Image (cartoon, rainbow, N blue to C red; front, side, top):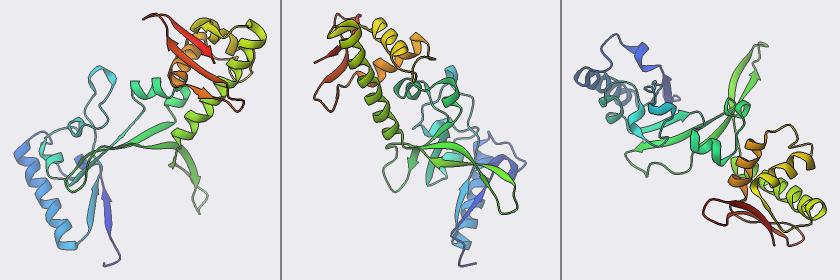
Length: 231
């Protein structure tokens, strides 16, 4: 059918009954699939499982996290990893336990004709209703940059206000800053102090300039002692 440009199939293990860890066997399977793509002039998108991560986390841009034989990845022109937030992501975006379940990222790991890697595409889990009324799971694009900037400004605004009005100080410890946040705005009052400290460190390590010109930043002042400053 000339109107068909791509065919998605998977998981790969369900397309054959052979040893998926045998490179010779899987080279044959992948050769057959490549031949099918060539004869029909249709791109094949194969879904495949990852192996179990070491230490519970994956390296998102690695092509070597797939399950089984290396020939599976070697035979493909491009590899994309669909993964939950990893430890660095959780810290950078200060994701709560609930939020970690809502986001996934699609990251390039291999590309024969273009540069691999680059910024991942973040997706949020959602649901859609089909024409027959059935509700199914889906994804929508998530703007993590906008999310980060919104939270940075919210943190900086509350801290600047609380530090001046409550503490009368232009510098407080990281713990005191977390306490000011917790008691200074309903947005943060239900969060733990450890979670707030993590968010402050993650979001304010780069200064935030507010509308009145005030700069708020979190900095390491003595090698191990973090402080929040307003300038």
